[in-house]
Image (tube, rainbow, N blue to C red):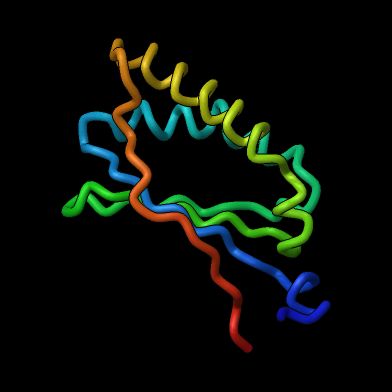
Length: 113
C-alpha cells in the first residue's frame, strides 16, 4: 500500500504512440492545438516533453505532474472527451476517416533520487 509520500511526489505519465512519418507534422500540430492548452489548465500539470523515433515511427510523450493524486483527479470522461476532439482535429487535417495514431503503451514513472 503506497504511503502519503507516494501521493505527494512528482510523477511522470508515459505514453508511447505509433506515429507514421507522413502523419508526424499534423499529429504535432494537433498536439499543440488541442492537448497543450487543455493540459495547461489542469491542476498539477508541470509540462511535457514529446519525442519521436523516426526509425521506429514511434512517439514518446512524458507528462510531468505535481503528484499522482492531482493527475488522477482528472476524470477519464474528460480525458476521453479531449481525445475525441484531438482525433477529430487530426482526421480533418489529414482528410482521414479514422485516427491514424495508435496508443502502444501507457504507464507512469517516478523519479529516483
